[in-house]
Length: 249
Ligand code: 13P
Image (tube, rainbow, N blue to C red):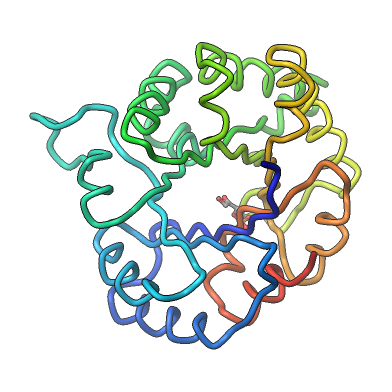
């Protein structure tokens, strides 16, 4: 089911006490029941965040995971470990994972499979770099990222997938895609899914936009027909700003 979602990706920010302080502030905020809210703290703080938000309508999600069930992968965290503390959703394919940790489409396909095999939901991120857009290749890049990591899946798997289009040139730069650029790409993404799996599946996909979403621009971006919400970085670190975005629908 297509769903409005706003997810805060905290990235490598907030130690334990900062996590507790921000969660206390988030719990004082209110949002419409037809908007799903997620936050993604770092691994060390997931359990505390999960406990603190257990009775709330904010879902705590992970920023990453490994594809293996367990084993000799020093420094990594498995789907089963996340599930064992109650985490149901994981962000995969973030451009920072792709750029700094060499995560390519083939690896991401394995991670997606592992998450789905463990009955987890995936927020799958992708997006073109500035050079791709300047060359007019943004649709080709996005299409290949989606195809390579997701098109081996059965249609039924997509009920557990949320897509997040994050143009790399708009992440943390203060430069956002224009609402029209976001809409054009989201429409293209929906059509790409529809062409492969049928119109009903494309129409039902939740597709989030990420990249310098702020209280000042969220309303216009979210008003676009193919934009179902946002994946928020910097502005998710402040409770008032984050909830101004959550309430921008
Ligand atoms: P910013 O909102 O800081 O641009 O980050 C976007 C992002 O990468 C969310 O995953």
